[in-house]
Length: 388
Image (tube, rainbow, N blue to C red; front, side, top):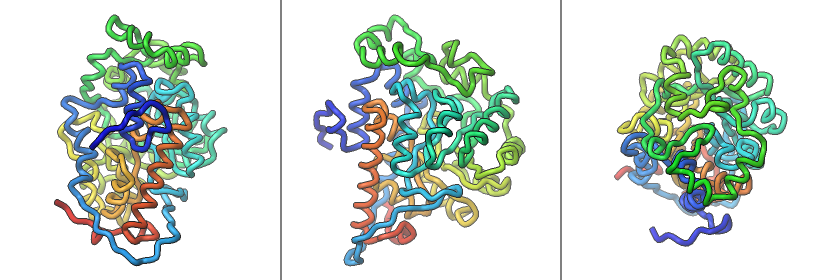
C-alpha cells in the first residue's frame, strides 16, 4: 500500500495514519508501549491479518438510503457496533487521557472502557460521562483493593464490569525491555534524548496535574509513586490464584452486566455462560500476552456456534477497518472493540483525534453496509462471507 505523508490530524484517514502521527509525537518508550506486543509479535500481526483471509460477498439493488447501525450491548443501546476497549495509562499518551476518550465515545454514543490502571478516577468519569461505560477489573492480591474498585464502579454508575482473565502472568513485552518503559516514566541513558526531543509531550507531562493511578494509589504505591514496568506490575500485584469460582464471586459482588475479557476457547466460553456472564470478549490482549495464540476473528465462529444464542459475543482486537467489523458481525459477533485503534488517535490529537478515528471507522461501516446491500446489522450473515 502506498503511504502518504502524515504531519497533522487532517492527514489521518486510517488507523495506520494515526499510528504514524503518534510515532512522531511520542517519546519512543511510550510509543513502543502502545505499539508493541509479546515475544516475536506474531499474534499481534495475526490479529489484523486474519480478516484478510475472509472475503465479503455483496448484494445490490436493495435500497440502502437509510442505514441503522445501532445495537444493544450489556443492557445499553449504542449507535455503532464498535466500542473502545479499556486500556491502561492513557495520560501518558495525551495529557487529558481517559477524559478525552470518554468525551469522544459519548459524542458517538458507544461504550468505552476504563482500566483498573486508569489515570483518571472512576468517580470523575462517572460524573462527566453519561454514555455507556465499562470498568475493567484486574484482580489484585489485595482483596480490599478489589472490593474498593468494584464499589467505586458501582457508585460511579458504570454500566458493566469486565473481568480481564488472560493476565495471570505478563507476556514478555520485549520492546518495553529494550526501551525501559515504566509507569510513571523513568529516564534512562537511552531514553533521555527521546524525551528531550519531544518537548510538547514532556512539557504536558511535567506541567499538568501530577501523573497517578488514582483508583489504586490508596492501596499501593506501584505505578504512581514507585516506577514499575507493566510486566512487573502484573507479575507481582495480580492474583495468580484467580479461578472460575472467584470469577463467579466477582459477578455476584458486581450484580450487573458482567463480561469476561480474554476468552479464546469454546470450553471457556461455555464456562462463562455457566457462571452467568452477560458477555465475553474474544480477545488475546492485542497479542501482548501469549504469542503464537490464534487471532480473535479466527476463533469467533466456533465460539459463536457454541454459545452465541446464550451470551453476547464481542470480537476484540486487530480491527483497523470498518470492513473488519462487518466481517466479525457477519460471523455472529454482537459488537467489536479495540484498543490501539483509538490510542494512536489519542496520542496524535487528544479528543479530536479519537473523534476523528471514530468518525472514519463509523463512515467505513456505513459505507460498507451500503455496498453490502444491508440496512441493519441483523441482515449480515455468513452467507455474505467466503474464506480463502
